[in-house]
Image 1 (tube, rainbow, N blue to C red):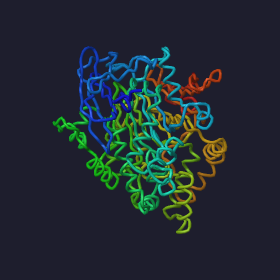
Image 2: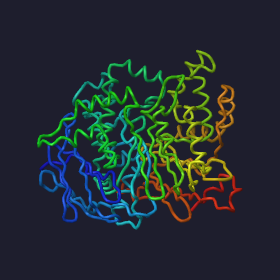
Image 3: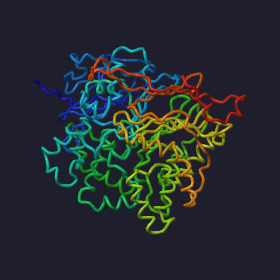
Image 4: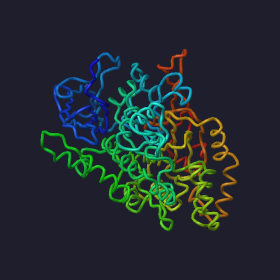
Length: 568
């Protein structure tokens, strides 16, 4: 059996009206070519720690067109595989004026898709969606899928990943079953993206990505104490460098538009390399990753895209943190200023994608705000130590646990909604993941734009049933009243507005979709289901759907969150 020269991909990444970026990993140095509509585009691979990558820039396309393409490595056709049974991959350029349709979700583990894997981790909703789309479904294709964190789990590895680790080092020594270096990250991404159905989907559907903690490690940058504890280990330095370097290659590079790539310091080296020999970026990328960790303001992982009358702002809420107690913030000054510049009206919808929910259920929000105050000394030194232990044990490190940031971004959202930053949009909608349950909440307002939180988590990594009950009680039961009292006891300022749950929580593996429709912003969640015991070919089932209806002049007095969205 001949091994394909294509190791991973192709992956359809940034696509606009006239161009597309197609990412691949090859097994050796190569020239990679994309062929479509009688034309061709080429790129030479670059190397990172013995792995070989290319990003082919396909340009000069017509807006709103759907074009089949093929991929060649050193002149030999490698994609599509005619024996795969999947439809040909397509390049679909954006059509001017077409309303945005997108999918989103977070938290996806890479375990086998057989009965055993489905029993422990549930059905992969992304794969179920891929099979539905491959079957010739009449569902309209999204313009992109946004993966909002935990695309890979570097700290909670599968048996397949552990077998790879055991073959190259003593797994009993630190960091044990967790990832150690770039080579292990490369294999983890291979496990995540090599399933035939998902691989086909990602070769056709454009994607955007942002990391969360498990892409690096649980509780990444939750506090200064956590960071110091990690830096004191023998293995963290290599881990964080490998994690950020591989993230740039496998995830971030494809987020960039052609114009943004021109300005990227790492891409500039690739673009300037004119020799026929392959450029080795290993040392340079390691130095870049180390600098990005030590000085977060040296590089920006966040990005912003406009789709006609809809703006999508994707926010880094992990690497850009300021952990110094006196200036503690989920976004440092540079990142906050960047976000402030993009939180603007003049769009029909402003979508803010942040891996961590901006609006947690209010009970959990109050608990996190209280824990931050206690951890920073509101109840003395003993209370601070207890608060820090609780913060790490219960993952209390979302926006609510960084009150300076929460208050600032809440004020930005309210200003946009009130028309103080340009014409007020129909909605300001936060899209998030992370918490392993999905829900919809809305800020209680009687005028201006609706401010909504929509969460889709997990794609494939469900909470154990006991944890589901705990999360529901803490978030929606007595937790709100108790959390509010606790926060006040630690002198935490009240939130600038209040919000209520509209729908949820539900704990299924899900992939969410949204569509800008004439009647409002439509949102729906879908999960995979086993039909007739066939675990390898799951179906797709609707879990929930809501429509965020814009306020008209006659609805200015509506204030109830339950009236803000209509179920379909």
